[in-house]
Length: 363
Image (cartoon, rainbow, N blue to C red; front, top):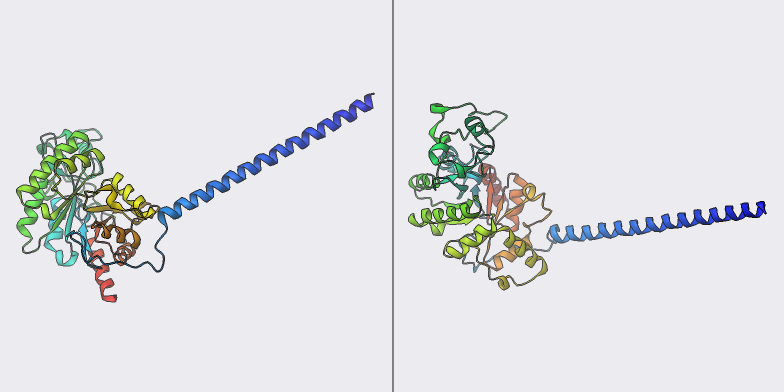
């Protein structure tokens, strides 16, 4: 009996072992299948989002464009991003002056800059919501996150906006305090910048891309102020205003429909999907005149590629200009120009100007 019992136990153990082995094998097959499905789906999504143009895709000139921001092929508009952040402290009068006074070298057609509203209702030129990144605000006020919206213009003008500007490994304006800070390195307002450019540009008529950075109600107040500045100077035909805040963008479109604006992120995504799916964009009744969108490094090296010929042709079909940021590599400048882009925003306008000049001579 003991021998029989022992054989039964061994048989049961073998059966249980085989069952466990079977379960493990089945589980692994399920896991492997799931992993394969994930990889295939991910590959399909990446291909859908970022696959470049087919070799036969050609630029389609939009000769019937009524949008003044759509440019002829290779006649790409060069925009000084943050007023030329690679050549002078960004969004300072020093940068604006540098580009303006030596524009034969830079070839700039458009100034791009950002605005925030102050506690006393002024529009200051500032990319971030706070002064921390570019100035000595932490030292001066003894705390972090010094927001533009909580300072008056007079308080903000005490800061050195060149504090953290770096070029060739050097910080040429670091440590300047009080009366040693040049006026063109202090906080500057939208009014001051536009008036300076308009008064000193001669026959050249620059365009402007102005992005509102303020949020919520501050952003709406900033829109009111900016609209007033633009209309008082009769510049509506030379300004595209923008914001990444959907609520502010909707306010701008509803309150000031006569003012040209760029698409907000939600609208950009809709545009992207309609293009990819080959749908009629007129179904959306769009009210923006341009897409101001990233490319290359700024777009995660084009995980979402918005710079293809197909994408640009699609935009031009609907009379929408395609403007790209922040294009600081020559190869990206050339690629976008070859694909039919209308505007390139760059920290290094001289680089873009020379790259485009060389490309046109090759063509």
